[in-house]
Image (cartoon, rainbow, N blue to C red; front, side, top):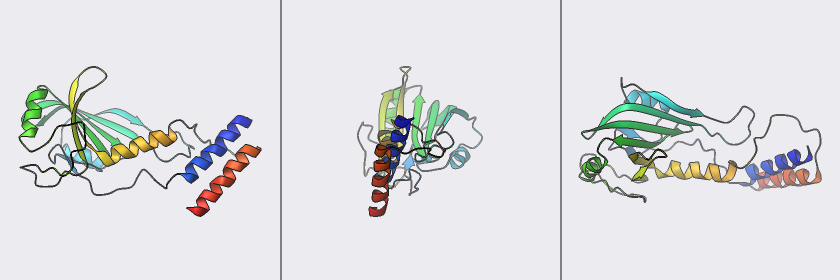
Length: 208
C-alpha cells in the first residue's frame, strides 16, 4: 500500500513538472501520399476521404477510465485494396489521439512504387524530408518523412508520416508508458515520500 502511494506521489510530480503538453493539440497538417491524405485529420475526415472503399479497424486502444495520464489513443484503419500512383496494395492509416500520423502503404511492387513517387519529387529516406515539393502537388512537404521498411511479418512497405506527431508520440511513451495508471480513488494515507512528491508537484504547478 505504501509503495503504491509513493508511486502515486511520484506520478503527480512527473505530470506537474513536465512541460504542459496535452498531446491533443491541432495545427495545420501536411499532405501525405501526395495529398491523398492530410496529417492531423480526424478519423471521420480520413474515412470521408476514402469514399466508399472498405475500411477495417485493426487497432483501437486507449487508457483505462480514471487514468490521470495525458490522453493516449491509437486507432489503425486498414484498407485492403488501395490504389496510389498506379499501384495497388494494402493501406494502414494510424491516428494518434484522433490525428492522422502515419500512412503505411504495401504496394505489390515496392521498387516500382518508390520510383513512381521519386518521379513526383519525393525523396524516400529514413530521415526528415523537409522542404520538398511535388511536381504535381505544389506545397512544401515540411515535417513529412517518407521511408521504406518491413513490418514484423517481414512485409515491405512505404511509410508516410508527420514527424511532429511521431515525436509527440515518442515523448508520451518516454514520459508516461513506464508509469502505473493513477486510479481515481481517495488516498487513505500519505507517506513522507509521497507528501514530498506532491509538495514538489504543487511547486512545479505554481512555477509553471
